[in-house]
Structures are given as structure tokens and as C-alpha cells.
Image 1 (cartoon, rainbow, N blue to C red):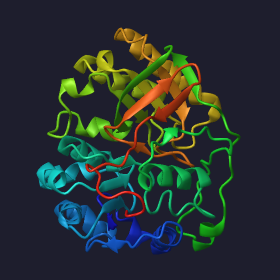
Image 2: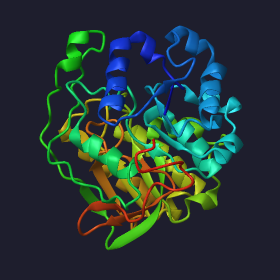
Image 3: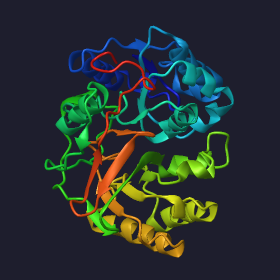
Image 4: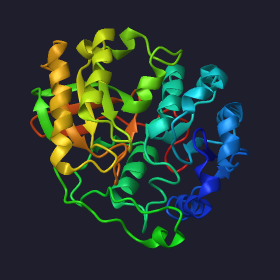
Length: 343
């Protein structure tokens, strides 16, 4: 497994946090991680050198000794890597790519290449969770990446979720568990029965940056897809999310979807305001004649902890009666690289 830093230079800023995540990769999952040459460069150097960040990503995919690639942390400018990303290299060297948030850019490069990637934790956010990685996140990784069996129904979170911010600059916080909010079941806003479709999506804030680029899928790629959608720790308000989704509507995407699933809002948004996002999204769907497609909010992916793992391009099923999401078929394939413990 290779560690890359395609965005913010977090490993150099908080090496104790990065090292904590690396220990979990080794001790909990038995993974031999190779840190790519530029992954731990100073943050200001990485900011000035997007080509070097992209070079690490491309080198990791091209190296036949590496079977998976994971991002160290997110950020806000992976879009700057696009000129140096080569989907042909990714297509010729399929392997599991893992990350979330700004890594959405790289997921869409994998999608263009026809390679399944996985929207899930990063080394510093997820693996290095304060006080230890959440059980739900660990189970999701094992189910998606270490087994050829179908993942099945994604389990509902009965342990609660954390949004408390503990300063990463204080090493003592690394062993301090964050406060957990009471679990809240996902909510069905509209739709009935069961629908299936390939998963496409990511961080809403980052999707805005890649619209119109070479990585943005053609309109037909959205036919029958299930859009998974979540917001960053910057907590964009529901009104802004609605405006972003109207662009999907204007492109003709919303009317082509089989369904829309939404992660719990990031950024410490009060639980009392979570339904404001669902209401805004449902309103936009109605504006574009998509009031019939299933819409479920409050799911455990993206900028929330614990987080599940979602595979791009793999068929998922929405069960409106059970208000659940399942992955009926195995996520690992010859388009992701070796599975069953070889990540």
C-alpha cells in the first residue's frame, strides 16, 4: 500500500497524528505501507508543487509492487493535480484507491479510467481517530476491501457519531476519545420500493471544482446512477447546497438518477439543523421533476465519524421500506487490484 498526499501537507504539520494512523494500518490491518517520496514534504512546499503531488499518485499506480493507494489527508486543491493525472496509467494498473473529501478529484480520475475506488477514511482522519479507530469504520473497510464476498446491507450506526473538534497540535489529544452524539437513524424523504444503480459522488464542495473539467463524466454516465453526496467541515449552508444541486439539474443529471443518498452534514452542524439539508435537497429534486426518486439523508459516510466505505461504480441498492443501503455484489474485482487481505 502506498501513502500519498494529494492535497494539504498534514503529515509534516502533525507528524504524531500521521504516525498514529500508520500504526493502525500496520497493527490493525497488517498492511505494509510505503510512504511516497513527497507525502511528508512541508505543507508550504506541497502547496507550491502540485505536480510533485500528482507524480506521487501516478508513480504509486504505475508501481506493480503496490496494490492499493490511500491518501494521508484531504484539503482543498487536489483539482490543481488534474493536468498531471493520466487515467490511462490508472486503467493499465488497477488497484484500490481510498480517501474522501478532496480525494474526490482522484476518485473521478479512477472512475474515468474504469477502476473501482473507495470513498473512505484517510490516514489522519479515520485511521488516526482520537482514542482509536471506530469499530464501524474498521468493519466497513474489512467488508469492502478485504473480502470477495458481497458487503450486503450497510449496518445502521447504533453507537452514535462524533463531531467534537480536538486540536491536532496537542499530542495529548490523540489518546482522548471525542464526545459521541446520540445515534440518529437515516431519514427517507421520498421514494418507494427498491432501486439499484452504480454509485457516483463524493464531497459536494469538491464536486463543484471538477464540474466542466476533463474528469467530469459525460451525461450518459449518470443514467440510472445513485448519487452519494456529502458536505465538508466548512459546513456550507443548505441554501448553497441547493444552488450546487441546481447545477446538476441544469445539466440534466438529476432526472437521470435512480436515487440520491446523503451523508450526515460535516462541520459541527447542530443536529437540529440536519433536516434543513434534506428539505433543501428535496425541494431541488422537485424543481427538476425528480420528486419520485428515493432520497435518504443522515448516512454515515464522508465528514462524519464513524464512516462507512462506498465503492465507486459498483451497484448499490436503496430499500425505501427498510431505509437502508446495500451492496449486493462484491466490491473487489480485477478493476481494483488484489483483494482478500492483499491491500
